[in-house]
Image (cartoon, rainbow, N blue to C red):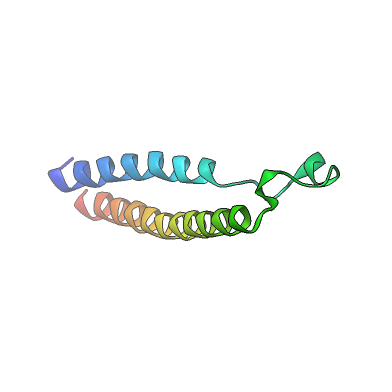
Length: 84
């Protein structure tokens, strides 16, 4: 393994942990039994919009990190194939 492969491996490890963290921070789309009882405390205007913008930001971040993850994995694979 050369230094470039090790660097990409470390980036991949960090990106994997961050991707897991961002995905688990997203709010579930399923409200479950809470929808039957009339909602929750986020039914106010501020609560709905704050959650919507946070969820939108996390969704964009997840998509971007997923694309970067794919590129790093592909690059790491190509480097190991062409170097050996």
